Length: 358
Image 1 (spheres, rainbow, N blue to C red):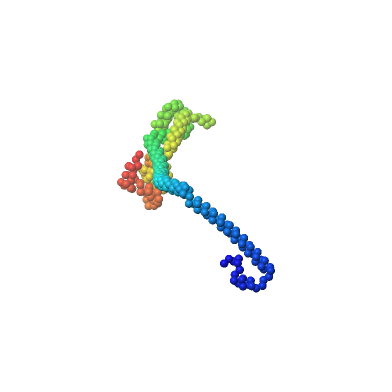
Image 2: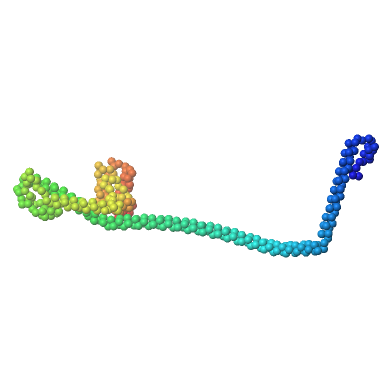
């Protein structure tokens, strides 16, 4: 039943009296529905013709064959493309494996290069350390060699100076003899001055005669004294002047000699007036002087010399030895002097004396 047609209820209502307007509207709706049905029928007929045309198109053998051929070509192309894709996939897999191998090889190469760099750096550090240690060893060896050479030079200078010490001793003995000679000459002049007042004038001897008499230790003969000069004009002693000049020259040579020894750190050992030191002094004699302390060096028989801490020659001295109950007990260095005195220490002192000989 169409919705545009009245139902049984509507038909039952039709029997009832309706107004004129209602029937007019109902008639218009009926017409409208009729027009719609006509359009639907026309559309249905047009669709039927299109369906028939489509069926004829689809059922056309020629077009179906072309479609099948086209579809077969597409399938064949798809199969060929599938094969190419499989080949390309295989090539890509091989390429991926090759790239992976190359990556592993590159990684190994990088690792080997890093290890090589580390080995090279370690080797360079080791070589640098070896070079530094070698340089330090060379510097230490050079320093030791320099110290050894310096020590050898010092020892050589000391040995050379020890060989020259007797000459210095002779020089000092000459100085002491000259001083004694000058002193005796002055005493002789004083005695001659006193005796000239009572004795007649005598012939004045020559300079060489006076020098010979002075060296021999004898006084001038009684008739050889020079005449006494007036008080306003004192007599000038040419011999005393000559001896004084000679002593000054020897003193200058001795000073120069000691200065040369000082350049090699060689100095005389102080002895007289000091307490006896067995490391520096060699006691050869003893003396008894109550005014001097026990164990003090009262006289130096031969001068000693030392070079830094090395003793080149021990000083030969005379040590004071106070005898009797009034002697004070030795203390400090005095005790060492007493223990090292000749005649008191026995064989031990004799051994020390032999070892101290230059």
